[in-house]
Length: 223
Image (cartoon, rainbow, N blue to C red; front, side, top):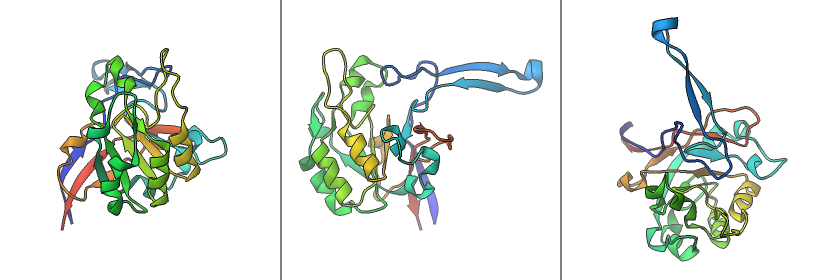
């Protein structure tokens, strides 16, 4: 078995990386340099959910597993990239009809990645007006055994702002209650143009954390 291609699904993290409204911005400052200390070292400050990251159940459920308690096997598995761009409209839910064509491929262990196309707005205010997953569609996905759902937007739930109250976080709670995890701020899903990708969304093992940044990738594996 050989990995013949790796597609990066992650956004770079730096001081200009867009974050969820109210979250801390990343700060990367030079701590040491080769010229002065003999080695380069960065001092990194950022929120646990900066850039492409994974939400643990603990993010929305107090007594649920933290990111370092979720089994590592959860974060690696066969991927299904659901192209829902046709149903992905600003601040509108993505319902089951958009996911139904992928139903036969959804089963335990599968990582479902929702390709809305909204990553093209990353870094702009328009990014927060993303489409989101309908709660009833989420229930059907969970009923099929899927426990990892990712999206190329800031959240699978609607992001509120001054003009939109939002619908709360039903998808977050549904996935957390099922013991699953969410991957947010994906990009590059259009480049996964090969069948049966192996997907890895392994997060940093932050102790007792609600979530952590991940280097999400999709790999083509050949025998």
